[in-house]
Length: 188
Image (tube, rainbow, N blue to C red):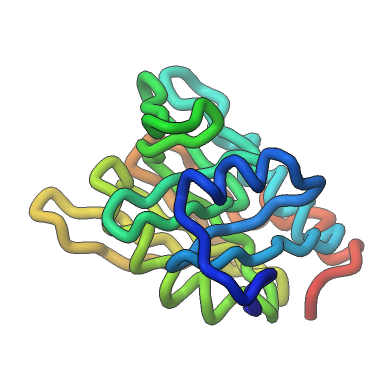
């Protein structure tokens, strides 16, 4: 990830600046990072995951939904965000939420290290978050981190023939998620 600009910017300036931009930009540590578009396989997998969260009171939000991380002050765009119950907006912006229940990232070569590292550290600091899901583009494999009642995180994963149940009750059946995915170009 490389910054869009060499000068740092405050959160309010970033929010105003980004609203005037054509593309999406994440805000990390005062620096702005342009978001690249996903491959057809990436977008297909994101859509398949998104469709598994259509039962009330949970609502899936697309990759255009910006999430504020209160502890770090960062602003990120997950591939899929799920909110259960009322949406809590960031005080200074009506297009930024602060209470995701589930965050999903579809892994790409250029983002996998960040999704497993700094982003994961940011996401797990959000009090409302109970599920973090990582979806591979290279093989039929989904990883799931679930927050336990005492605050620790339990790791589970599933490959072909497997399934994962999230704390929301949503079930990710790997074969259903990946059906047709490998017919599309991906980020190998």
